[in-house]
Amino acid sequence: MTTSIYSVIGVFIATIFGAIGALFLKLGADRLKFNFWKIIKNKYLVTGIISYILSTLIFVPSLKYGDLSILYPLVSTSYIWVILLSVHFLKEKMNKYKLIGICLIIIGVIFMGLGN
Amino acid sequence: MKKTKSWAIGLIIFSTLLNTFAQTMYKFGANQLSFNLNSIITNLPLILGFITYGISAILMIAAFRGGELSVLYPIFATAYIWVTIVSNIFFNETVNIYKWLAIISIVLGVTLIGIGSNGAMKYKEAI
Image (cartoon, rainbow over all chains, first blue to last red):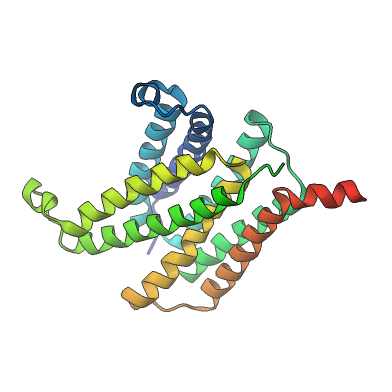
């Protein structure tokens, strides 16, 4: 199957929204209070959920119209975005184990794409 | 004090499993899908998938409280492993060499990240 450019763009955008969504969900989760109204007013959580849903809505149709051997590697970039966002915004530390681990996961996802 | 707690890692893995289950339900449900409201509401696999997806998202948010995003998020990659297994059992999709390599690579990657989530600190300080 040929991969439509719209699929590529779609997956790329969905991946970024997915990573941003994860960041906001983490921020929201850290500030979570177990009170219905506080949960609804948790701006980070709400933003994260919206971002995540948006990402899925764009993601699913995009995957249908493209070769997974091309699209999965794009999807794997989400792990890179999340690392960058975590280090910058959440002040999380990087070390060689995490770095090599992420590389292995990216390679794994690329292989998964080739295998499909 | 461990930065990323074991319960959080376990919960993410479970959430990923539920996610895979939800995706499988969607796939089953897609076979019986037609675009009218009645058919959607009575589409049991689809409804089940939707509910499971919601539960997995709630568990994920809960898990995020227990650790670092850079450690917990990559664990979602294990979904590819579960999906491969499910596709093989339920949809008769073959597991080729690439998928095997992918599984091995992802397992190694997640393990290393787990080590790097706190263990590495101790080794570095020891040196």
